[in-house]
Length: 108
Image 1 (cartoon, rainbow, N blue to C red):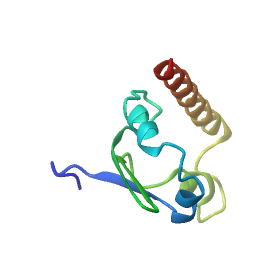
Image 2 (tube, rainbow, N blue to C red; image 1 turned 90 degrees about the horizontal axis):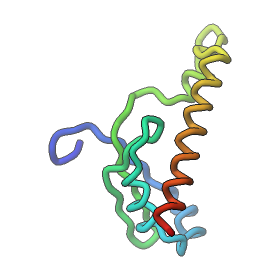
Image 3 (cartoon, rainbow, N blue to C red; image 1 turned 30 degrees about the horizontal axis):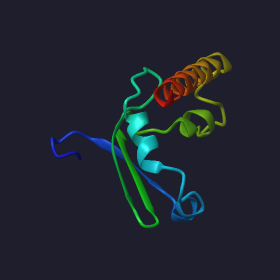
Image 4 (tube, rainbow, N blue to C red; image 1 turned 120 degrees about the vertical axis):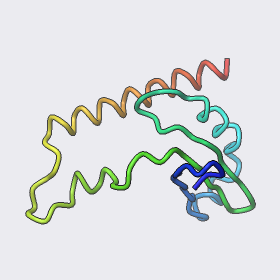
């Protein structure tokens, strides 16, 4: 929960990944990404970094991950048909495209 009582999602980056990418500018990337406003991008509320530690705090958007809908069903059938899967993939692609355009614009 945030200080205002909002439910948030916390992502802790595995220490091995932190150490192997120690000099990649985590703080500046997180600051830039936190400015992103797009319907297919989960807003970043904040982040924290310390020696060997990186944490990202984001808006909470649901309690079931996409992997569940793609692979987890008791009778073996997928919960998402291919049409919905393609729409999700297209939305992800639009979000990534907007991020790339926005990040490139911020760096000019």
